[in-house]
Length: 345
Image 1 (cartoon, rainbow, N blue to C red):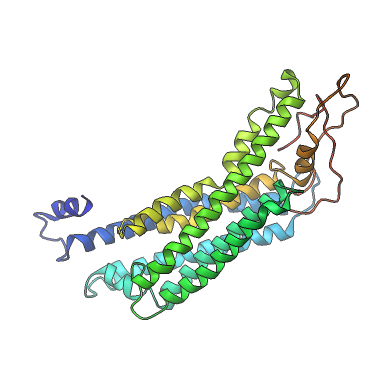
Image 2: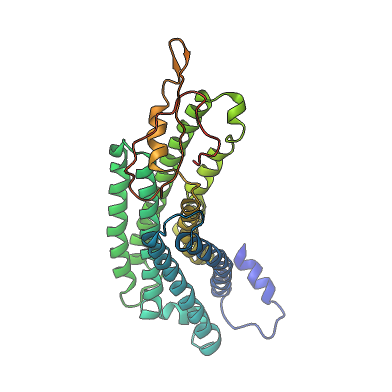
């Protein structure tokens, strides 16, 4: 459908390049993907400065979080290098070497296994490792006291790293492109593994938040719960990093089908995989994310009612630590009707 449309667009156009319709479609997909990634990069820039501002110049007398700021800077730097080198390659393909035999797409493919193609691909993969690592650590924090549940995610994470290294080697071989057999043989498992890991962690995080949500409802009166009912939903949507999983599935489907439309989503993935952890960091820096204290409190909310009625003398759960750092505080035992509305989940 896309190829026939391209052919129709070029009908009667004396300035159209003398190239097959499928090549024109690949060029259009490549061009569209780069442009969409620039839009996503704009969101990345905004989130980067927001995170750095909250981490290095926090409000209310909170301490600066240099480790998380360094992580944010490195992650943003990887995404910036990927974007800059892709824009440069587009300039070389469509402007500086437009008369290259086979057109801009042929030139871009010829650069795929050179440093111009390998460096941005390596940046993409390292950023993906960092993003998955943060999500894995968030899962560890949320499932505090149930570390056994991380066994499968950790195995998937290690497998993801191993396959990615082999994939990088395969695309560095002579005449390699995104769609050569050796690249597809390891590219599909790599993208499938990282997407599976992302979805698994998404489910684990969402289940934990949902369980906590139900316990909080049981522990609170209707009046005290009104101000908190929306918080678990926001946590599920933001902290699950579902945005990356959606675009990954779209890319994998097209990549497995051998469609050039996969070029549209690959550059976008480079930014969505960075946007997701930056959203988490933004919530961490503003104390709106789940913490170790929350996790311990969730484990404590199991029997909100005593034999004689509601428990008395309950304490409140307050999040006043960086959720990505170990906590030295003991978990608060949250009793019925004791949650402070200012508590941040």
